[in-house]
Length: 385
Image 1 (cartoon, rainbow, N blue to C red):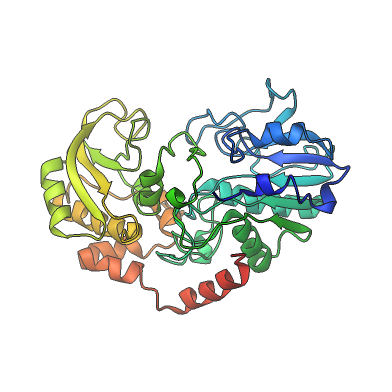
Image 2: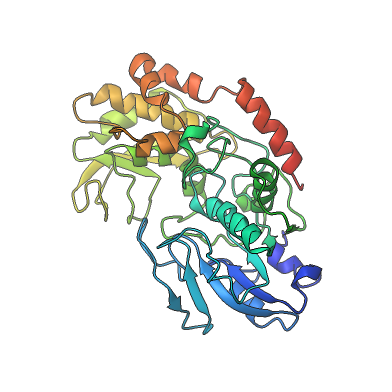
């Protein structure tokens, strides 16, 4: 079984942590291999003193809704101050760090640049630099493995909290490697230490690690959802629901105007690698279409290693645009970057879909660009395994 960074910390404590005051960026879904929360592990470790908690999106308790601001609280279990990095600020402030010497980060990423934990990592490294603090990142597996990257290299004008740098939708790096990538590319984390895993190999998907899967956010439900997310998350910038609040978020998509049988047939005729669609009906708990019966499809992963989630999603966008030209829409820009553009990392994808339909995917996932070559070199320099 793979040993996580938190497990390796027991026998290999970085010298910068010994006898110091430690602030921890994590939530209660971050656990060791025995499913004990990292918060508990660090609070009972006598080699240093845990003084503060910092919660990413959804908070230390991982209970807030998507996009919901989280307030400061005193964590009832640990008795520690739990500062929010998804409320008034998205990075630790000087006041929050007043009782901290070392900032430890233990967040699970799910292999996609939209996932906000990786951008909390980058902003926290930046804040630590300004405060003169050391940063220790406890590494965790990329559940999509580390061999495959796929998608479009985000263009600098579209950098945001759902796209922290010029990388593809599916990046192929672990959390510790992301920290090294941000250090090398964005120049943050001047006093960075990564505690690596033991036994992780790049070809491993999550089921190969021997670890229990703990969803790091409320709508991160299981391994196939994570595999689909680098593609299906693009639909968050459209008027189709991704089933947030249902038992299969990011695996289903639809709307009241969608005929799921018709859409499933269209998808399956494409014979997309590793994937099969079936018609379904669902009622989302949040907008779009909160409380309304939506027709649509559920995407079933038949071969996890052959699946191409980003290409699949772009073809789905094109199919929906063709089947429902008067009902399906992509969020407009209205003079500023739209939600869809921030997720896509460009303003070109909409035009490609409009002009070329299914061929839009060839442009969007083209791995032969200069930007892709630059990312490959940067990713290679950041690798730990």
